[in-house]
Image (cartoon, rainbow, N blue to C red; front, top):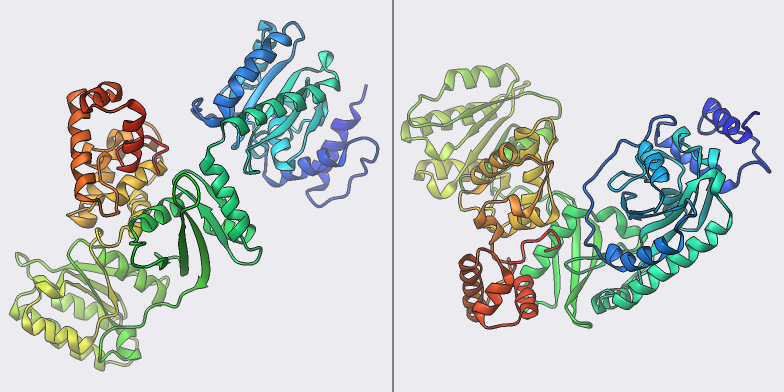
Length: 562
C-alpha cells in the first residue's frame, strides 16, 4: 500500500523548498511548515539522530518535572507509551518508560537522554516542533520528517516558564500501533502540571524581571532586562544578546558606581553600539534595564599633527606592553587596507633592526608592522625618524608603516617623534578594559586551537573578565594554550581553570568588611577541601547563608555563577 503522506514529503523534497505541493486534506499545515523548515535546515531525512550533549538534570525544569514524570510513568505502565522531556535546546533530559521492548526500539533511533531532538537536528518531531510552533502538536507515523521515526506517534506540548518563555517540551510517544489521539489530551495535562510546579517554585526574582520588562520594554527600541542568571529581550533587542554579551554586560554593570551615576553609558567593545543602562531595585535583588542606542563612530585620531595622508601611510598604536597593541594595529590595517599582506618585525635590543629590509618593503608597496618601538635605543630611533620622514614624502604607492609603542617607556627623542606623527589608536591594560577579554579569548582560541575543539562556558568567561591579567595578553594567551592542551572536553568550565582564576574577585569594589569576609571564606573552604557544609560550621554560619555569600562575593564557582 502506498504511503501517501510519505509520498507528499518526497514530492516536496523533489520540487524544493519553494515548490508547490498539493497536500490539502492529507497533511496538516503545521506539518508542512515543519517539513519546509527541515529542508531549509538541510536535515537528513534518513539517518538517525547523531547530535549528543551531556545534559544537566539539576535545572529548574527537571526539578519541577521529576515528580510529575514519576507519577505519570506509573499511571501509564503497560500502555506501551513513553514520556520524554526536552530542554529549550531540544536535548532529551528525561525519558520514562516501563516497557523494555519499547525502550530498545527507542534506543535504535537514539530517542534517549542526551540526544538532540530539536527540529533543526532531526526535522519534524513532537519535542522540537512543539517548541518552534509554540503549541501542542500530534505527529503520526510518516508525518515525521525522518524515516527512522515513521513507526512512531507522538503528542507534545511546549513547557512555558512563568515569565512566558518556552524552556522545554514534554512528549508522550510510542509505537504507532499503540497510539491514540487521546495522547494529546494527556500530554496537555502533564505539561500543565509541570508548569504549575514551575509557578510554585518560581523565583521572586523571575517575577521581578517580568514586571520590569513589562514596565520598561519598548516595542521599537532594543531593550533587555537582565540579572545574573536570566535575560528578557524584546524583538529589536534579540540581535544584541548572546552568552558573551550577557557576561560582558553583567560585569560592566556590576563594576559601575551607581551611587555617583544613576545611569551607565558606555560602548560595547568592537560592536559599534552604545549601551545605556539603569539599575532597578524593585524585587529581591537588583537587576538592570539595558537599551542599545545605535552605532558609534570610530574614534578620531588623537595626534595633534595627524593628517589624513599621514594616517593612511603611517599609523601608531600606543599603549602598555602586552595590552594587545599588535592586535589593534592588525585590525586597523585590515580595515584600511583589506586583503593586503602585512610583514611584521619586532624591535629587540639584542638583534639589529633590519632597516634596509623595511625600507625596501615599504618602497615596493608592502605594508610593515614594527612592534615594541619603545625598545629602540637612540641610534635606532634616529633610523626610525629618518625612515618615517622619508616615508611621508613618498606619494606613489608606498606601503603602510604601522608602529606599536608604549610612550611611558620611550626615550625623549622617540616621544618627540610620536608627537610629530600623532597617535591613531590607543590600548589600555586588560585590568582597565575587561570588556575586551571575550573578543581576545575568541581570537586567541582560533590561534591556539585551530580545529576549534574548545570553547569557554559563560562562568569560565566571567572568571576571565574578573581576573586582572597583570601580564596582559601574554598571560591570557599562555592560560588559554595551557587549558586547550590540558582539558579533555570541548567546553572549558570554571572548575577547569587555575585556582587563582576560579577565586578571582568581582569587578565591583568590595568594602573592607566584604574583603575580610571573602578571605575568611576562602580559608575555610581550603581547610575543609571545598566542603561547603563543613566550611559553614567552621565559619559559624548557616549553610544557606554561606551559599548566598558565595554568590555575592563571586566564590560559588559553578556554571550558573554569572
